[in-house]
Image 1 (tube, rainbow, N blue to C red):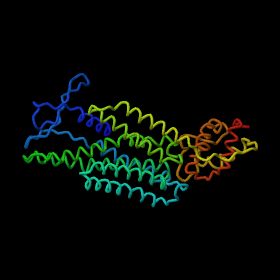
Image 2: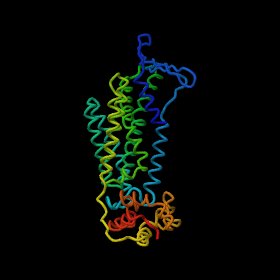
Image 3: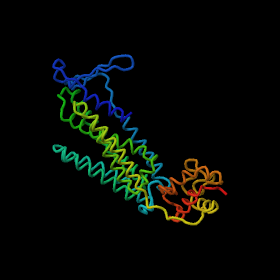
Image 4: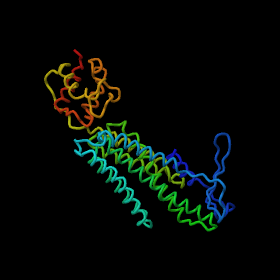
Length: 373
């Protein structure tokens, strides 16, 4: 609802029609048809003392989105010894240190961004460039500090926190000032509206990158890739670019062709980068029997993928995947190949220490037909 409202109001702003008979306080009007009737919408400032008896604010969609997001961050990434946040292969952080870095970066990120735009308010081009570089720098830093999955989510939470800060610390206070001035019979400060709109536009450009990051947990080929920061950069830049060309269409500028081009380049870029696989597993010349493959799986995978897991964090078989019996192993050969050998994203953060040689042995067993006898 929050992102939908953001897109709707930006669409309205870019499609309002201004005419001389609307008065000096009007910023434009638009007619729409929906659900069997017509809607007349006008954006305007109010004359001193002209406060309607009922006024609708759009704020709680954002508030609940951020609060529920932070709650999920705490439950999934902070609790359970920060198992999803910390990857010893990336950086062996203590859980409390990783959590402190995560929380601190969210606070610091908002403060730096907000101060930057306050000091460079008259130089939006410079502020935009610096904000963009800082965001990409933060995303890269997260991939060098946390697990790939954690780095992506941390970047998303940082973006969401900046967007929420814009709403509650810049946009809503401007609206309160406008309302207070109107009630007091004073003229409204148009500069406040312009500043609020500026932050709203920032949020508008961040929506597409944020949407991708919100569902990124479903794409281990992206977040677990050794070039995961490159994939994230491509999606963030491409998403913002597509949003830009969707915005300029309302100014009567060419938009569809460049938007499609950037969307295609983004998808192709992600597909190309994710094909740069990790170093190949060591080749194995000898025959690998099912007994040996099962021995590796029981030693490295059964701790989490069992009807009775023994892992200290995962108490239920993740994704319902179990390897207790030969039949269960045989039914998941394709998944073993993809996650344990090609992506090397399993075991989770390699908690059980599967060696490259063991991955090579599993690859040889699958290559030879994955026989279960």
